[in-house]
Image 1 (cartoon, rainbow, N blue to C red):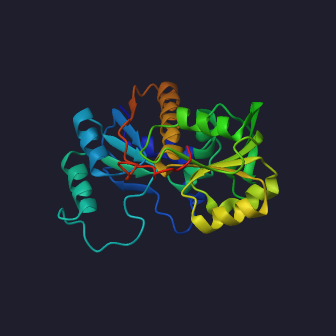
Image 2: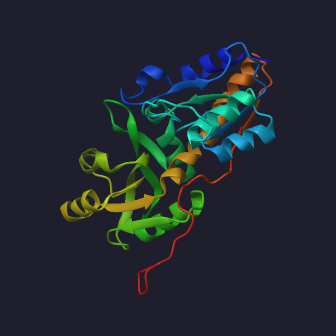
Length: 272
């Protein structure tokens, strides 16, 4: 079996840490570089449910998209939920590695996986300078209503589901996609000339302004749902590396829904 340091070197080659944003916290959170790794679990969030799943699975390494500690901390006491995560990891000899914005801008990366989940054809990056997001084409035009239904069907189920803004009967031929929070990308989306934008966490004012300035269709899915497809892509990439090196790694993708919202109730008379 490979050492943790060897597996981390392979992951860093896929998602170079120097490509992460300055504010980000990527890389190895805990783990002995010399420890052997036989089983790896990929997930979006480094939360207790995922760590407990890794313990039950017998995983030696968890790779998550979201950081555990994005800001500074003064304690890892087990009385705090993040401290309890760290305690559980160390007690069970499980390493934790994070690939966040360095996976967002990778090629292939988070937005490629999102496009793939919807069977969209990627034609280029949304933001060429840093490779963030993707501009995609549909195999055939469909209405915004149909495209939103496609997203709802293909992405993992969440309480939020998919919200839509725009003319539901407008034809969609080209789409910009960005896994995770995407309303900072509206300028790039408008410049790309696409018919619709699929992302997550769209806030009221940016979405309202975008709707007023152009006929752009907006499809807003849950943050977790737009990033989960990356876990499957990343697991496949590590599987291929393991095969090349003869490591024999057993690679798994968590199906545990760690989206924080647990229920959704439509307002009386709300449109479907």
